[in-house]
Length: 157
Image 1 (cartoon, rainbow, N blue to C red):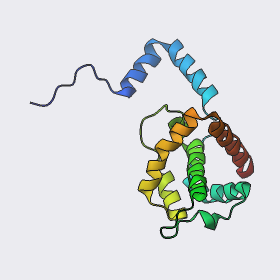
Image 2: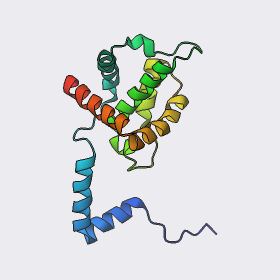
Image 3: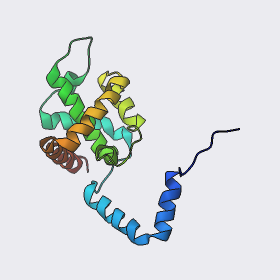
């Protein structure tokens, strides 16, 4: 006999029920999310190379510097890579940075960055947790990232 699951409902079922039974709760949640999350979310991963180019212009670094070669580690460049990954999360999956979802970062983000910068995808995935903590607990990091996000979106639009 299969395992029995008690009092555990699929999230889609719960959301559907809340929308139907408690429309005022749905409205309140929707309004709050609209104030928290950025107004524009990107969906086209082919923009990532362009975002890297603009990011490097703003930070006044050569994109080639961010590429990983061998085992030489420059901590400042690692921080730039993390910041760029954070920027991509706020552009493509802001709900992840805000801690609103528990699913992994979008595969396309880490895959593209891995290919662009020669980084290991596992390393990039490991950075995501640190980025989320910094975004949620360090106001200066969050403020800088949101300003960078606005500046970059203004440039590519």
